Length: 317
Image 1 (tube, helix red, strand yellow):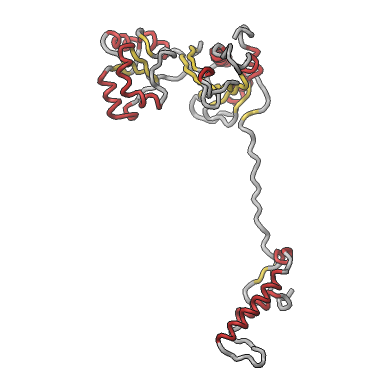
Image 2 (cartoon, one colour):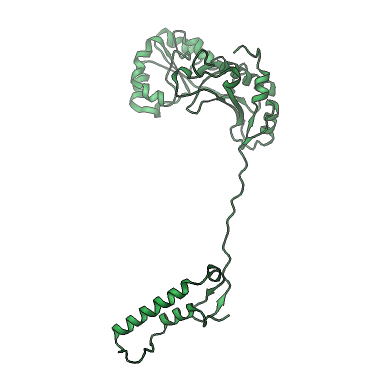
């Protein structure tokens, strides 16, 4: 196919040819040539705009030779369908653990986490879910405990196995150096040291380490608090999206041990269900979903139906 018969050929010819043939009587001046060229270009452009889009897609000019070649096919990128990260089907806890072990690729013992979606309004202070429980088979993690105490209480903390024990000097060090001086995972404070922690409350609060009476980290018996912290004690609280998360063990734990930890954690969460409040969820609507996952796992597994039926003493929460 030739381009001579198309308006595109006329437009290219008008732009590329340096000498033009003007009608009779027209002065061959620079101004006249410009006017003629503009009018001719406008007329050709109007004719060119009338071409169908189909013709434009099927033609492409190759330089000034006038040869028309088929247009290069457009590259269409199709996005691959990403599978859901949460397995939709309900399975048992042992089946979920078996899937995690079969798909495990890490060279270390991965942690097993549980996430519980609750049917509460996290914006309401009277529906805030926060508590602590002690897992029967611990979590498998080594927890570094810091105790703010002085005198006899400090000696008790050392004897119980606390990693860091200090008083005013430790508070001053954290206040001076900030978060860089925090090399522990949990903090416990003696009753007498609580007023002095106000200077570092913001530093500890950002990392969720500020001691609190409600969860038992402010006490006069720091020795027992340290032992409980290192023997499977788990703190939890509902986040902004009303989800409670916790680590319930390691991948190398037996299925029975992990299942007992999951059920023990669920019992602690169910015991905090709001009651006697307007809009408070019923027992059946309090727990919306229960999901198990591993540290490096690609999927999460729903186990709500099995876990709720396996809870001890149903109907007493």
